[in-house]
Amino acid sequence: MNVVTTFTDKKREKQIKYERSMLRELSLKKLQERMKGCFGSSRLVTGLVMNKGIEEACYDVAIEAFLLGARYSKFGYHGEALESARLRCSEDEQHLTDTLYNFFLFWGNGEEGPAAESLYVLCEKYVDAWWRDGFTRGEKRYKMRLH
Image (tube, rainbow, N blue to C red):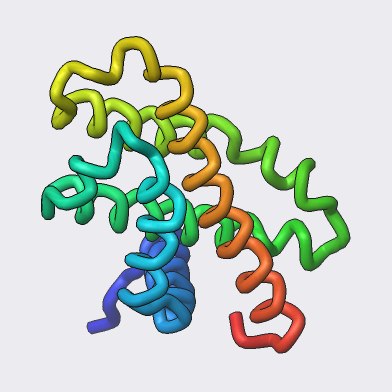
């Protein structure tokens, strides 16, 4: 008997394989450095970054943003500009930013009120940096035909 597979199963397998290959380019050291570089200078977040739960949440959001950028890098390979490709996934990127921001608010000490806007901007910059990194690395992989 033959096993019947659907198109969606094959598509999901291919996506998982691509994501695994993209994740090989990330290191824990780079995740830590960028997180401390982005949030370490903020007086608000400095105490929170020491919390392992927040640190892991930052890593999760960074990985998701990196993979999101890598997923949309195929449009860049086919000639679309980075900003127009970014508009395609703006809803997903906004969700990642909101998730990280809400996580900081949840674990915060209540001191975020006056500086909540600057914290949100930091979260946006963090997600944007990882999305761009994923996009450029994914585009390079497409150019080298490693997808």
